[in-house]
Image (cartoon, rainbow, N blue to C red; front, side, top):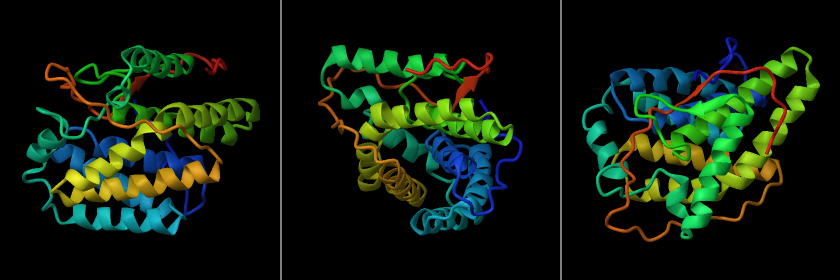
Length: 252
């Protein structure tokens, strides 16, 4: 899914759903398998997101990211670093379920995530049919909600905009806000790549600011001990392939 509406990138420094959607999209693409096209898309997104950001810490991190991507020196070795972090032995698990020790609750988490997607006519997908609780999928869905709210506000549909805002708060409190802080801290500790370090910094600042601004206090999840046979080897292309099926206002 392309999460951003056609006017994306024109937020002009104003805080709002469009600017936040850009920032979430940067993180979603940044934590997808890297190649030259992904890195170029990330560079363009980072430029737009930095221009639209009005929170100093987030804007500074995005400016560093944009500068680092501009010289093209980050691509060599990036695929290997992605595999070292998120593939193979999975040094930093990129799935929400990997931060829940109880397998019953883990299944309920994934079902709830997929329930959010269905409520808005979205589905997890992409080139490898990613699991819905992958970091890229969850961030892409949050960007999608923000972009959809921006469009509703532009259309004067305040009722649907309120539904989207309610869903954003619920998804942050029940899912993204519970495990992403630990994931981002783990990435920052483990990575040898400036790219993933900058993405982790930008993500931590963005998430902390949003949770504080919305007065959301999620119950944190901590990474559980993994078994030798656990199958966290799916690959996320950063995306939720969405087909908006009307304006379903059923929000979990």
